[in-house]
View 1 (cartoon, rainbow, N blue to C red):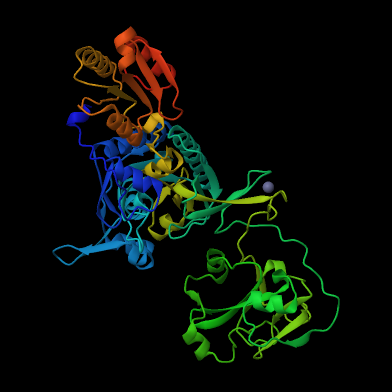
View 2 (cartoon, rainbow, N blue to C red):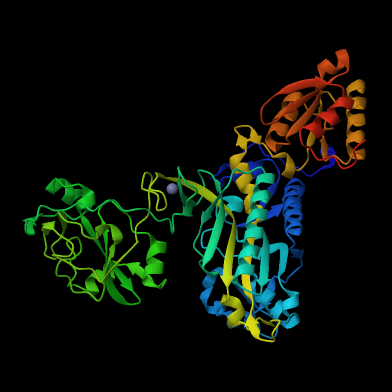
Length: 571
Ligand SMILES: [Zn+2]
C-alpha cells in the first residue's frame, strides 16, 4: 500500500462520544467511522485487521475439523417459533416484514437456521459428528450501544455449531473448540482467561467465556490465585466463612429513629454491617418475595434469576411499597414477616448475634438468631463473590478483575434438537436427537479488545499476526533521490516476497510521518533518513518497545522473518 493513495483519514482530535482508548484510537487512526449509534464503517486499514483476525480464526477452525458455510442474516419467524425464541428474544432482536407482511428477524445468532439445515439433510449416525461455522454480520439491538466496537448493534462474528451422536461426542467437540479458541486468542496477541459462564438466552448447561482482562471490560471475573478456578461474577461461587454466633441472648427491640440505611443503623448500634440482615423486598411475577443477605454484601441479579427461576422480578419500587403497606420501607426484617417466600443467602445459615429491621417504624431488632427467631423457606447462593473471598474449590484467595468477553462456547445438549426434531438413526435403527454445541467469537469486538491491551499514549501497537501491515517504510524527505530510490526498492522487494507493507510516500515532515506511524501502530518500521545518506543502512524500529537496529535493506527482510513476520515466498 502506498500511503499517498490509501484512504487513511487520521484525525488530530478524538471523537466526542469516545469514552475508551480503542474507540478513540481506531477512529483517530482512520480505521473506523460511525454511521449511527453502534453501527460502523470499516475503512481500508480496519478492513485489513478484520481480515487478518478472520484468517487466524479460519485457519484454527479448519484445523479443528469445522467446515465453513454462509448462512442467511434474514431468518423467517417460523424457525424461531419452533425453538420458542421468537417471543423470548425480546427487543434485542431486529425484526422486519417483507412485502407480503411475513415476519423476519435479523440473526443475532444462528442455532435455528443451522439446526434446520442439518435436520433436513442428515439422518444417519455415519454423518456425525459435524461442525459448521461461518463468519458474518450479526445484529443485536442493544439498549445502550457504546464503547465503539465493544457494544455495537451490527458486528462481525464467527459462529460454529457442532452436531454429535451422544453426550460424550458433544464434550469432545466442545473440548476441540475450546482448544482452538485458546490458539486463536493467543495468536491474536491477547492475554486471555477462560471462565465458567452463564448460558443466558442461548441455553444449555455448560459454558465458558473467553475474557480479555481490561479495565474498561463490562464483565467482572472472579479467579483463584491458587488453582485454576475462574468464573464470571454472574455465577462465581465462594466458600462461606463459619457464621458468627450470638451470645444466646433473646432478641430485643431497639429504638432507631430515622435510621434506615445499613450504614446509619449499624453506625448507630455499633455493629459491623456484616452482622446486619438486609431484607430485600422483590416483586416476583407480581407477588412479594423477601431475600435476605448480609449487610455488607450485594445481591447478584443473575444468581437471583436462577434461584427464582424467572427473569420477571424487580426490587420494590415506590408503587410496590404503597401497594403492600404491611412492609415498612426501611424497617422490614425477617422476624415475623408474612410473605409467600423468604430466601436467605447461604452465609446466613446458623448465624446469630444479628440485627435486622423490626417490621415496626423506627425500630430494629438485635441479638437475632437464624433458626430460632426466623426460618427462611430456603437457603441459596444469591450474593456476589468479591476480592479476598475463599475459592470454592481450594479455599485459596479469589481475585476480581474486569474483562471483555471475546468468545463463548456452549454445550447445548438437546435444547434445539428436541424442540426442532433434529434427529438421526443410530446403527441399530433407533431414532435419536443430536447433541449440539455452539461457539462464538466476536471478531470486531476482539479487534477493539486487542487495542485496549495494546496501545500507548501515542497510538495503537498491533500484534504482528493481525496488524494491517507488518512493515511501515518511512523515507524522510521523500523527494531526496537516494532515499526515495532505496524506499521504492525496499517496497518492491517486500511486495515480491508477499510481505504486507505500507510505504509512506507522502511529502510530509518527519514529525507528521512519525506521529501518524505511531497512531496507526504497524509493529515494525523501516526508517530511511539521514543515517542512510552516510552508510546506506536502514533503521528497523519496533513500535512496541522503541528498539532500533541499523542494517542493510537486504538483511531487514530476514530479520523480520526471524521476528515472526509471515513472509509468503522465502527467497
Ligand atoms: Zn482455588
